[in-house]
Length: 142
Image: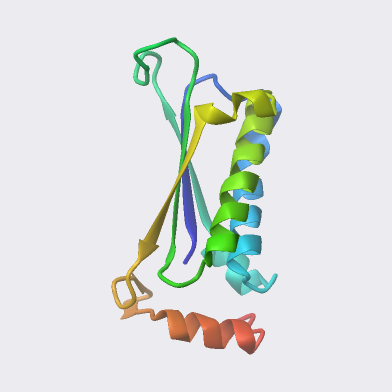
């Protein structure tokens, strides 16, 4: 159930970056979550791109665009090491999609939301983290 939502000001991404950023963010998220690379798990990694209208995002200092990535994962899915790696790689993907260098990294915020067990439902049922771990351990692709 990993999900990533990237909020950016309209026009802040390059055309090429806009075309590929969602798939790349989903790939990075699955990698750091440790999910198997199967069609089933790839289909569960949702990626949203929200582009704000001009003037909808500002800071008190300058008019440079800022980027907010919100990641939602099951509680317990990410160790501290995995969280650090996820934040680093998500930041790199967003900077590349915007045509920016690492010196602009503070313009990217990554917020990790851990969904408490028993509070996520899909397909009309509550999905528990243990169920996902069992599917991953079995290499399920169905």
